[in-house]
Image 1: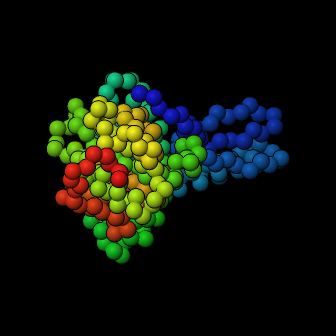
Image 2: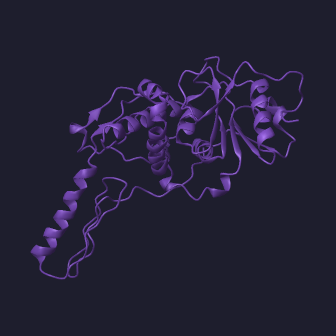
Image 3: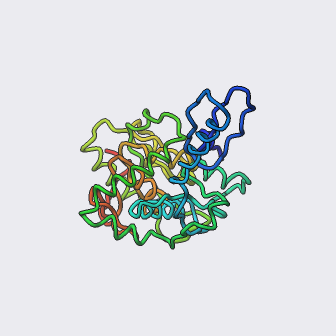
Length: 310
């Protein structure tokens, strides 16, 4: 599985080079960067300036983190997002406890968890902070209740937008990807035997609804499996079929798409939480939606059709 390469973790406090002294190594603590203003006076005064600047770092000390899980990326990132929103409501500084296990590492790569951390790109809890951190129970249920309250809609947008900004901080320019509709089609996999697959009759119905409102839109269909199962989406210039692509490519493109059609899946649901685009989400589903998302009924389907789009 191929992964995009982003920027590495930045230093939170770097000491600028003082004339006549060797460079002090960067302190790799968090993703933000801070340094002191240079002076030209004596050692005592300059070192006092450095320590005063370093003291300001305590305002970003991690005070809350998520409870670890062991399931797939979507579920775990959803829990991280939920806890990060909860932390913002309490004016606490959230950091991610490094993920220790995750499903869907199909080729058993030893670098898989590091790559996941690079994709998430949120501040990571250091071992020095671990003793004083507040670890929250899974906050998915809390977010379900929070996002459906009409009085919270603007606040939901703002807090999710803060997380989105951090998530995109190490991604390359993606402006060319913000013009299409991303469609998630869920298929069976070796880690999941719940009967929650996407059916063409439903997916194509939604795509046709979107097409009536966006006549020039191109659909990028993300899924996994044998291409022979996706014959309805082939031979149409309005549809780009993208199967078995790397997680970081698929997830990031879902986040930045102009329109996102989610499946009954925590993977695309988590992407929708970070999206600023138009969301089409299925009902029923096991999590709640903000009021500014559009929804589609899984019971509304097409019949007697050969191709996905007319």
